[in-house]
Length: 384
Image (cartoon, rainbow, N blue to C red; front, side, top):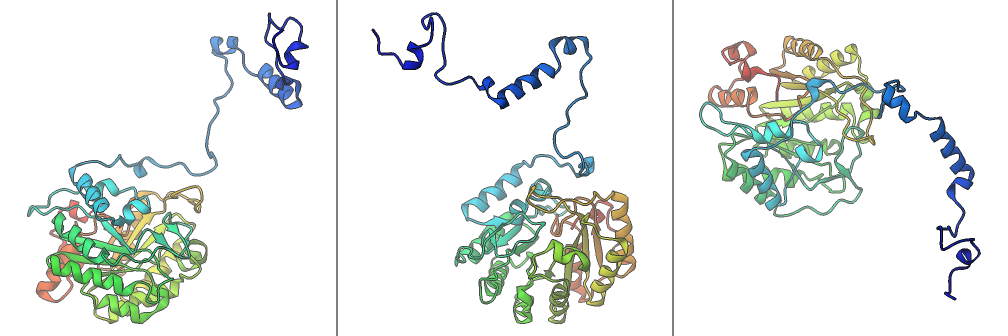
C-alpha cells in the first residue's frame, strides 16, 4: 500500500474525491461571516435586471476634490529629456523632481523666446537630496545626518547650466543644519562658478534661513547672485504647524531684510494658499514683507505631495488668486505672480524678473509696473 498521509488514509473514498488535511476555512467563524456576506449581496439577476445597489466610491470622499485647473499633462519633449539626461549624468538633483512639482513639464520643456534663447527653467537643488528638517508640506527626504557634500558639485552644476543655453537659472538647496555654515560657502562657490562659465546667465538663489545666521546670509548676498529668494511659505499664525519648528516667520523676515541691506537688487518670497489661512492673515503678511522691502511675491496653491503630509484645507479659486495679485501690486510690490499652479521658481526667468534685472543693469534703477505696460499679455501671466 502506498504511504499516504494519515489525513488521506482516513478519508473515505479518497481516490474518488479530494480531501483536505486541514479544516475548511468556511468552518471558522470568519469564514461563515464571509459566506453570509456573499449570500446577502447582489445576485446575478440583480445585475441583469439593472436594479443594482448604489455604486461604491473609493478614496477619501470627505476631502476637497482636485479641480480641473490643477491637473497637468505628463512631461515630455526634447528639452525635457536633455535636461533630465544631463542631471543624471552629473549626479545633480532638482527640487522640481524631489518636491514633485506639477509644472516640471512646462519648465523643463520650455520653448524659444523672441531672440531665440531657450526659455526652459530648471531649479537645481544643491547639497544633495536629503534635508535635515521636516516641514509638513514638503516631500523632500529628511535625515539628521545626510551624506557629506560633493566637492565637485559646484563645478558640475556650472558645467551643466552652461550647456543648456539658458538666460536664467534658479538654485535652491536642502537645509543642512548639520554643517557649521549651513552650506553657505558651498552655495556661494556654485554661484561664482556659474558666473565664470556663463556670465550672461542671471542667477536666482532660493536659500534656507541658515538657522538665522546673518553672516551666512551676507555671504550669499555678495556671491554674485541676481535675485535673493527665501520663502516664508505661509502666514505667521500657521508657521508652527506648516514648517519645521526651527523655521520661524520672524527669522525668515530677518533673512530677507538683511539680504536687501547687503545690496541684493531683487528679493523674493513665496506664499502657499489653501492651508487654512484667513484674508486678514494674508494681508498682514503682505504688509510685513513690504516693510522689509521685499520686491517680488508669488502665490500658489498648496498641493499635498503624499498622504503622510498635511491635508489641503481648500482649493483656492483662480479669481481669488487674481484678487491677491491686485492687492499686492497696489501695495507696491515690483512684481506679483499669483495662480493655482504658480510655484516660487516656476518659469522664473521667462517673464518679468529677467526683464527687470536686465533693464536695471542698464539704468541702475528698478522700473515701476507702469513702465512694463508694453509687455505682451503672455509675458505677464502669473508665473514666476
